[in-house]
Length: 168
Image (cartoon, rainbow, N blue to C red):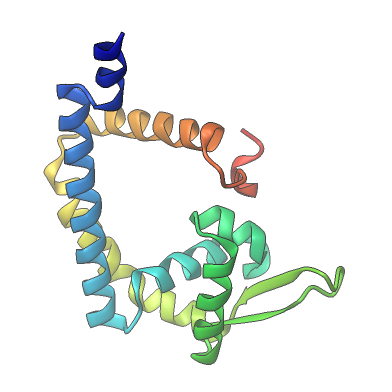
């Protein structure tokens, strides 16, 4: 029994290989994206994540709790980051007119222009570093695997399901 318990504490060889590969990709890709965004547009990858999520929301506005769930952050981290972005004129953060207990974050005109300026370089980098290394045949398999993993995280993780994923 002790051997079986010990085996469950560790990943098997194929799991370890996949996990290490994922971690290498995730860490290196985040570094490269952050570096490119900083150099080209003065945005951090975190800034880009917030702006991108807001740009997809109706009216460019989301409740802070929904925004946090959408980008996978804790609410307190997002609150601090939104304050910094607000000082730079990229977003606004105010109490919702319909419910003064709720904070809403909105994309400003400057934020929308900054995102639009940053997007082409970001997309080119993602295409070059991520997609150019894949065959057309492997892309659907990768997409399906990542979607399956994401659903498992939503089902078994601690953050609430993002509003955009609730209709699934």
